[in-house]
Amino acid sequence: MSGSKLGDIAADAGLARVHIVAWRDLDDPEAGGSELHAARVAELWADAGIDVTMRTSAVPGGPEVVDRDGYRVERRLGRYSVFPGVAASGLVGRARRWARDGAAQGVGEGDGLVEVWNGMPFFSPLWHGGPRSVWLHHVHGRMWRMVLSPAVLGHLGEALERRVAPPFYRRTPVVTLSESSRREIVEVLRIPPGNISVVPPGVEPRFTPGGVRSPRPLVAGVGRLVPVKHFDVLVDVLARLRRRHPDLEAVIAGEGYERPALEARVRAVGADGWLRMPGRVDDDALVGLYRSAWVVAAPSSHEGWGMTLTEAAACGTPAVATRIPGHADAVEDGRTGLLVDGPAGLEAGLDSLLGDASRRERMGRAARDRAAALTWEETARRTLLVLAADARARSGR
Image 1 (cartoon, helix red, strand yellow):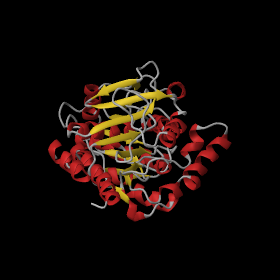
Image 2 (cartoon, rainbow, N blue to C red):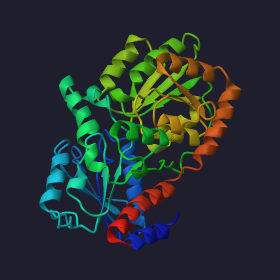
Image 3 (cartoon, rainbow, N blue to C red):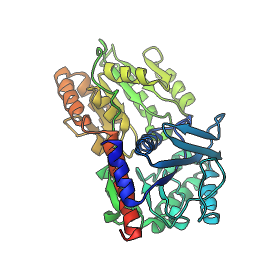
Image 4 (cartoon, one colour):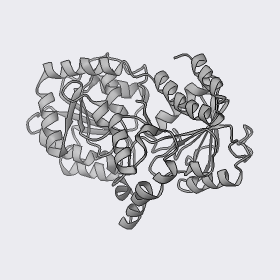
């Protein structure tokens, strides 16, 4: 989809300017799939001639304002104060705009607004009466208890997401990444199903087959080192698998506050000689890892999609992933990889694929073919169509 076609969609709906509010920016040390998704869509919208401004929390040590790929990012508020800060500025300056020169101005009523609801909501329906949509990748649920201490805070966060916030969003168009996440949003948050559109994320063109597979069995895990990814479970599973696959090697690529605990776990199971944790790798190294791995493993308990799975798929590498909303769409069970339940299922699935070269190759080809249909251009087009439809409805066009 060319930029001009995106521009036509925006012009037809009267969307000259769009604001995106999100928790974190792509430069944040803990940025993940949600931040990449927002950045790629913002870039393509800006390339089509839409005036795009993104507002997020501050990046430690980074500038407050960044111009990136044609759009502007304002990162003035704290990690948690960004939520009340954005809402307060919207309520106080509802008729004002955020100027391109950085002056503190509000979002105009005719401007489009996208709220990225990543656990904590911004409550945009309360302070923006113009065209809007919400990107809600998945329900966080018990994730709150994994990251907030003491436990009472986790329960409060879960109650906020499940009970307090949803009534405010039942008249707002919602975009999620997968049909399985859509079902969960309807069931748990009680958002009307007719208000939810499913738009899968794209895959960068650089993820293609090539290179040489590792001569030894190689399992790759990629993602932020945080509790929800459950890489501690993967470490234990890999240690048991190495008894049956003595040449097994593994790489867990990513960064996060769980690194010290995971490194201790690796040492405790005696895996420090064959399991590497290189941190957050650059684009070329990530492509090389996917191409050389025999299989990619994803033991997460919550995902909106699992973008690492389709990145690996585009390189011809099948996946073994937990059977959760998001993964259930990113992986076609038995065709592009395996969906499994619990640590025992993860171990059995990896064992099965590591020991069957013809099955791995067959699944890798199917995974590559499916990933080829996932483009960021299509993601940008379909997310814009949702916002444009709301703009036309509000203007009576």
